[in-house]
Amino acid sequence: MACIIITALFASGSVADTATDILGGDIGTYRVHANVNGAKVYFDEDYKGEIADGILDVPVYLTGTPYHSFSLEKEGYYPYSGPIQSVPAKGSIVHIYATMQALRVVEYGRLHLLVTPVLASVSIDGTPAGEVPETGVLIIRDIVPGTHYIHVAKPGYTPETITATVGKNEIMKVPVTLSPASSGPLTITSNPAGARIFLDGQDAGVTPLTIPDLALGIHTLVLKMDGYQDYTEQITVTSDGTTVSASLVPTPAQGGIRLSLSPLVFLGALFGAAILLWIRREGP
Image (cartoon, rainbow, N blue to C red; front, side, top):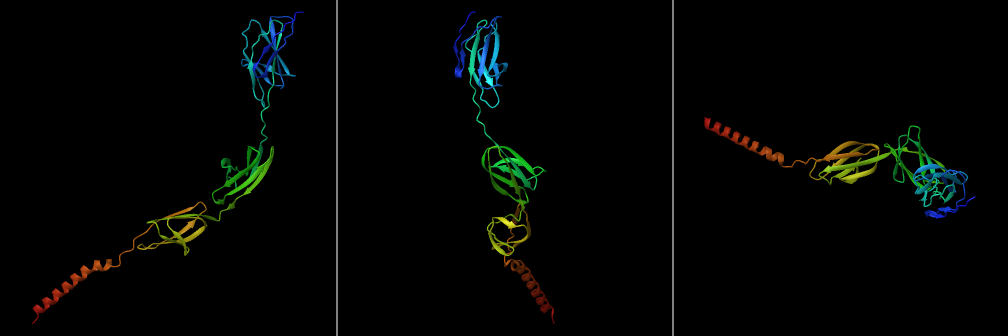
């Protein structure tokens, strides 16, 4: 029996090792050795089979087009590839060795947010994570282990921000209940600016002004400014925010009426004097 020895070196740690005889046929064989069963083997991107019991035999015809590269793939492992630099002779085996490395496994956690009310908006670490469905449970998958900030908000309710520390492979249930809002923002502007603000009789500052947490409901707003008439309005503050834009009306000048009546009085006096003069002239 003839014994054929073929030796070739492969990149990335693969080696074509000693070949042994195989009787019959104008074919040779590549024997792929790998440390991962089930890994898919490709020659020049042509699928050849899967590793079983650590090996896969790939027969090749001597008259066929030579292969130039091989690769192995399996989920959970880095792909492995290398060149094919030897062609097996008739009835011989060329051994190829490959050692695959497992991917770094991140053991993600999962959050089950039990939220009241439904349809609230949720963000995780500042990134939108979705809206709570009608079921009241929002499931957030692939949470990197560690501490995270969960923000839940809905119009008409006081938003909540909580922290949750998720462990590896942990499914954490986090209940969140929002309370109906008891206050809302009020923004007041005036033209001209600088008017003194009185809310329910209390001095609140000057325009423009935003009061971030005024109690919800009806309030009496009065704006005062020298040279302008007082501005008064009943306002309703809501949790979504209320804005008041007031245009102040100048106060009429004190002498304006007298100036406008003085010509009439003067003319009346002249007319009366003329009548008296006429009566005197026509008298006996």
